Length: 186
Image (cartoon, rainbow, N blue to C red; front, top):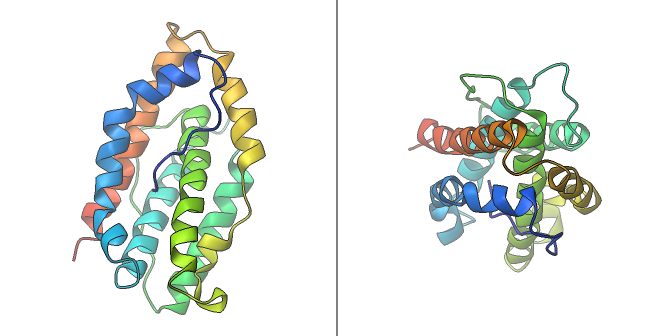
């Protein structure tokens, strides 16, 4: 998972509250990737493995009757990671959530991470030729979906049960990245 880079503030509604309430979990998940940020070329396959493991966990935690606007993005990212890891001859593994996660929580994690990945891609572009860049970093922008997701979040009452569930599930989802980092520790 990469750092969530927020879109321009869409008011102080639930989206803002979610960001504040999940900040510690986000920071713990981000800390897992310090070794990649410190040495991206050496830690590339590790990073891709952790991303894939956690994203599979998020995909499998889906509540079937809930729509996720990130569905196509999530499937594309997993396919790209599978390709990149196969190209590097690295076996793909996954971690699992111990409960189903709200679709809006999964959207928050997946779409937010795409914004952070743009920052990482710019850094990598200085280190790699385009043909060397893992396809994971070449995925199309999901900025329009992120804006739509932010609007959905701001339609939720910040003090309601739906907000509490999304917050709890987002924190749990960030934990999947920590769990994946532990599983891939070498």
